[in-house]
Length: 513
Ligand SMILES: [Zn+2]
Image (cartoon, rainbow, N blue to C red; front, side):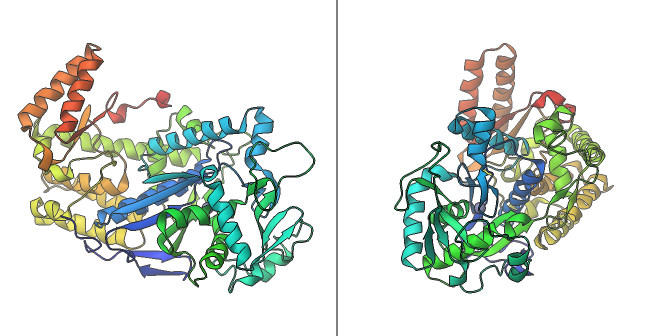
């Protein structure tokens, strides 16, 4: 079986803390623990924010490719995030509720679903755990009390604040010197704040202006937790301290993550930051100006889909640029990636046609394409079945991936495999199947049904599986869904997962939303 952390070239990742690319080793060889800052669910996610989750997903897939088991937590911020990261303005959720004249909990629920739906369309693997801020209020209050006991807080009429001068090296993660911030970006607006960089741990509800929809009782009065506190509390709760990797958009590097680190240090009394690796993806930039929120064009995944862009073309666009570089977006650029994706799918389909029906199952079952839920990859199986020439492609793919997830260099390798004159179609399919576990482009999802077979639990022969698939197809055609579900169940019990596609993936339609 898999041998954690030892497959292929050692993985090297850029660490924002040390500002260097360093060899990555999980603390616990059995499991790599990752926390990703999630969305604030007051509107549809901007595609710039979605880039962060394609990056995190690629990181997770890369670790899996290297043979590691990953525990991944993404949070949902449904309270506490103000319109400015600097403790100013109003709570984004409360504001959205007023604007839309809808109950705040309904808004949170609606946009949480919308966000998860976006990730599903982008083929981002489900995290091991979704963690919602409002489910952790009592733990946040307990953490705030600990911070108070540690002597790093002070109280103002507006709430409880963290004194950033009480922890050593506050803000060392940030790229902007703190001195500059106190004069420029961080203008002090909260009366009584001791330092411009101090931030709210608990915000007391204002006495005027009506009751907030989201508020809880605390030793500092009725109010709500600060945004930064949420991530410290939830990451420590589920992943321990320190854990392996904390991810987020590069905008979090300046304030949100600096504040998390300050809290982590004060809370645990340790001098580590709470995570061994801090990783940040760069911005998505729109020089065409067509993505502006005011126009509402191209700003969300749904708006792309409405314009005929497949979500996986956006995923491919994300992969085409290294995560630490700015990703240039324009309707033309993403349309170009759609053409590229169609070409890839067309080439894979042509290969599939060269392999006799049923032959797909003869590709080693362990690497049969999986939708990702049970992504596992015993590398040794693949290497034993590939020709030496095909193995070389896998090695160069692994080498580029291991160098801080150099995804733009992975795609030409894929092209080379597809166009290679000597590799057999089976060999090519095997190599592509394994590469796509990292790329997540569903390149092999071009048949009506794809299979992920767990051979150790599969008592059915290949012929029996094929026969059942055919019967299920007939049942679905005849709208006998009970029978179709029964067969799915039978196959599931035999360790076979089914993925249904409405039509071959390369014939997508804009109505996908
Ligand atoms: Zn966060």
